[in-house]
Amino acid sequence: LTSDELHKIVSKALLVINKTRKLVHNVPVLRFNKEAIGYICNIADGDSRSALNLLELADSHFITNYSLEPGKHVIEVNADQLREVLKRTHMVYDRVGDAHYDTISAFHKSIRGSNADAAMYYLGRMLKGGENPLYIARRMIRIASEDVGVLDDSCLPFAIATYQAVQFLGLPEADMALVHCAVKLARAPKSVEIYRGWNELNAKLDSEPEFASASIPLHLRNAPTKLMKEVGYSKGYKYNPDYKDGRVKQEYFPEQIGEMQFLTGLHLGLKPDPDL
Image 1 (cartoon, one colour):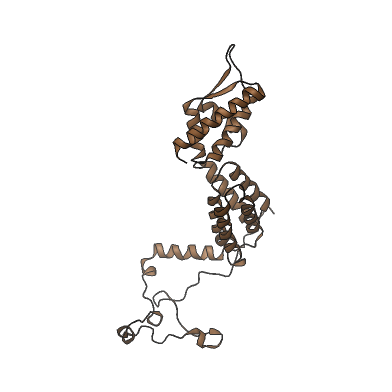
Image 2 (image 1 turned 45 degrees about the vertical axis):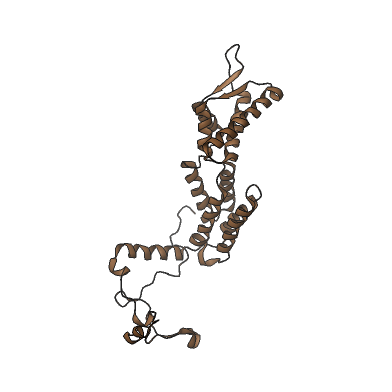
């Protein structure tokens, strides 16, 4: 939503809240100044659900926590007061600030550490705070390759299916799909073999120009024209499916760099944790 649209929603919601405060709870109504409403809209970052959640938290706080001068019947609320109130509720979740990055980091690391309960906890915090569920689903697609990898190939299509489920259903209906995926990833065996191998390869490509520009062997090159064939492109290439078990003696790396190994066969490290 645009800032103006969100301002209108918050202002209308505040009217409803004040009506309830007056007729049901018999407590003073709230008057948010322009900066206070702007603060809520800024934290919500275009998400009406998040804005309304924050407004409800403020309303709950001011049911009992207020003081009025004699003769006054309105609680004046400014941005600084609102900031302190929301901090005390422990439910402030700024989707463009530190809380956004800290919580998704804790979620990712909990899955990496195979702690499904902690993953659920941080997922719940993000959803309650109004985080975009598609952002969470995208991160789980990354986790499926980065942290689970080749030890459970079912996790990547499962994470993609979760993203699609969130697209189709939206919240709140898609919450179980997100939880399901988070728990599956946390409980899956972990492998960072391809993640580490890929990082090592990219480091060499970035730091060694000759490594990135080494000449591709002629027998591996494509030869769509007669001239290319005459030059030697594809000459001597052994088509693996023609051979027993597909095994042949053949060079695949450029001659200038020779045979290299980026995939070590180690799924995890070997360092012991002294705290265990």
